[in-house]
Length: 239
Image 1 (cartoon, rainbow, N blue to C red):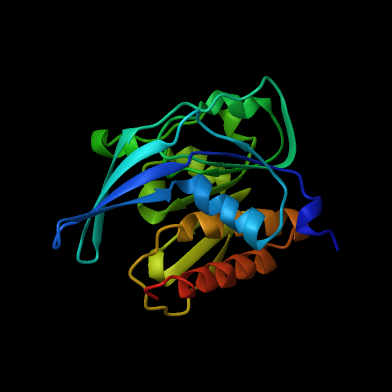
Image 2: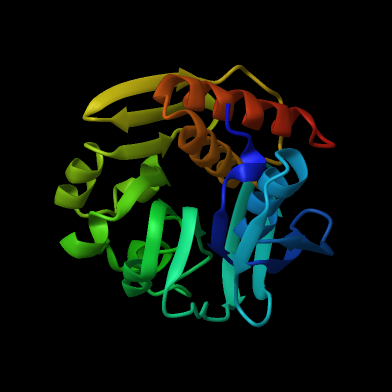
């Protein structure tokens, strides 16, 4: 059985400095964040993978306001991610904060491409526009992940085509669905009492992508990702 260490992984993502304002207490804290932080924690620290990381020259800056169980964030700044002309890896994991990565660069990638759309739909929400990706690029995306709300901002044809490959739709505390060869698989989450779920989506995405590359088994990979993210949430200080 191939180990995670033998898989060549390229991560295209952003680190961030999160400035968190707690509305009730007016207290402000600064934390390390960004999808790159959680993805590298999963792959390097938990699974022992060796990574090649492509990120911006400086960490992104994000402001977050927390009030009760609600959280609202805004991006202050984010640096573009510049890639070399050609890239070779077994797995490419793309997860951004905004549009700091150019979709056209997917053409440079030779390997399995896993794309989280969270960053790319942020600007589209306010304009009620849909994310559209050229067919040439879309066909290179093996795994696509987004929340229920995020995928509502994706072009319907692209979404339907993606269901023929792998589409992961997360549903918060309920769990997540995976479409594979147009068949739907449901993964129901076990109830976990936790207020801070930051990093859960990125952790699930990374765990699923690397396990599927290793096993090519959709059910085993989905269950592996579910258990991984549940353990991640249980380890949170306020779980």
